[in-house]
Length: 247
Image (cartoon, rainbow, N blue to C red; front, top):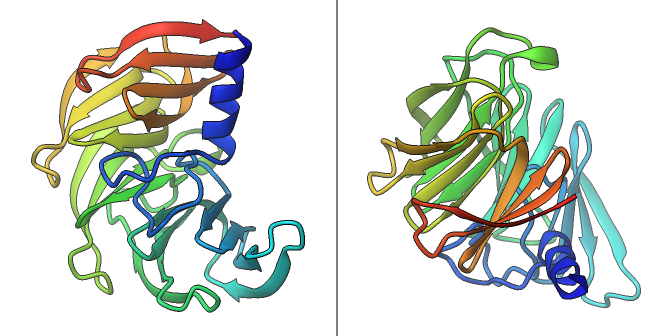
């Protein structure tokens, strides 16, 4: 049990996976976080968000991190996700896309705005030429209908929503290969086939899983739930099998 707990802590806080087929595909990522993370590490830099700014820290000397700058990016910033030399920042109004071409000086490239839900909470992940965001419109986020939004990011400066899939109470999300996992407070864990990346197809719903975020790690899906942690075997990514729940 101690080994399992250590394994989970390492993956959630710092991570080990550098595969582009799993949850994060930043260039030379040092760590792997969930879609609801508020900080991330890419190479020698740590990036963190507050409500309006992206904070940049040089951690080339880990024992003496140096704050470099604060970059204004928008309002009500909630989450951060690194992918392919960029940061995707989820807010209550849009997804902000930031370039890391110069890692010490991030530059905002664009915003992905959903015409479907005007105010919501936005965890976001990116994969190849697509970004997925869960837009939770109920509760404190306002609005009526929650959705899984699909953004075409082939033109990174002009992202466009191409699909809006109704869900109930979405939170975090993550992917492994051609499978997307979405946490839903009412429906449970939702499993989507994203072989057609712009048209996710719901293939399985696992009820009773009150998950808030997920990290696919090799053949294991790590789920943060309201009561602890659940580990699923995803040797068959479309058919997760519960291994253990830790309260």
